[in-house]
Length: 160
Image (cartoon, rainbow, N blue to C red; front, side, top):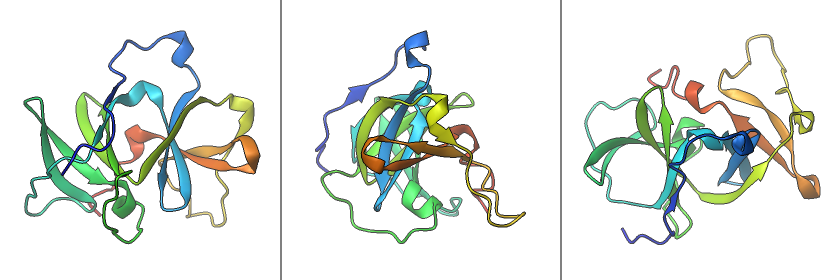
């Protein structure tokens, strides 16, 4: 596939300026955010090599500068139907628990500082409905919201 998105490399040491910074991305009509400190880089779609018996949502792997990186469809992981990739579809490469993982998302929104005062806990509708990887709901400008994800918990139970 063509690399339609400029490569953004965030492989820099974590600094105080990165505190409360999130990379917001879209999956469908929803906006999600992950802490920027986990983001290594954003790349355009690459050819994905499929492997048998992968956990739910895992599409396969890519070879990125000699590194084999598993790639997960955030859309599938969130229980949304799979859709054809567009020019905005990209892979966010994150570093979690000593591993690099690629997250396929529908598009990148922005990198933004979100102060803790603008983050509400996730709503609970049922005592058993708590989703372990949702950190909270951020209030953005223009009345928009972003669902903040704890990327390090996103893969717990992914094989269920």
